Length: 279
Image 1 (cartoon, rainbow, N blue to C red):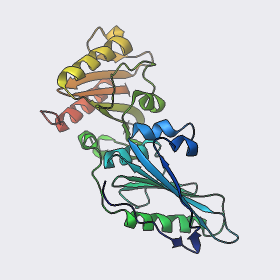
Image 2 (image 1 turned 180 degrees about the vertical axis):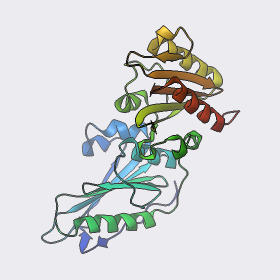
Image 3 (image 1 turned 90 degrees about the vertical axis):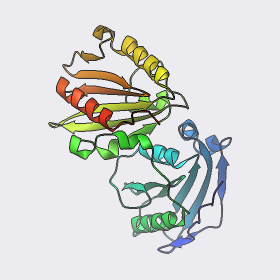
């Protein structure tokens, strides 16, 4: 089970009110009704919530989510990431008085129930204390290392690590059905690239076997791009390009590339970084 997080007790005059709220996979909906499925998709284990109070100031709420693995902690962090990095934990963002970061198996959010002097400073102070209190770091998903980097136009803060087709559709709609056969045994990374002042998407999926990857690729071609007649490349009505290809256990798809050569270059760059015998 591993060591538990060490909680801070105070920051900038805000002090813990000595109350704990605790939730597990059965009771998570009591706290975040409507969003619990998102956390469960990333192998949520438990949640501890504490409030920090200071007379005359809004309370600060800290939430500590323990996930099934460090990959899952990264995944839940990446799913809604949009603000700038602030150097807390293994990855973080802070904006609008809301701090989110991940470290090891933990995903942590800290926010105030209102605005006021020194609130943001206290939130960041609590965040740094939390990060020091997480006993150990953990690896991010290996799949991310297979993405061509910023030299190829990668927008790093738009990397989304996904484990369910519904989550994929919420970030980039593909189809009402699970045409790419995403399951708990697959993993996917969706991200954006910026080339010639235009953005387009790359989706990289790892399947348990090459056979399952091939079936998923054929399913995608048949459902999403039937006009391509199985060729795996198509210029869409908006004059942009979709390209899909498999290498062993991996399926790589580019959506909305401005030029065919841009799609080909990105897929080749990804294939060059893939392990030849899968993972």
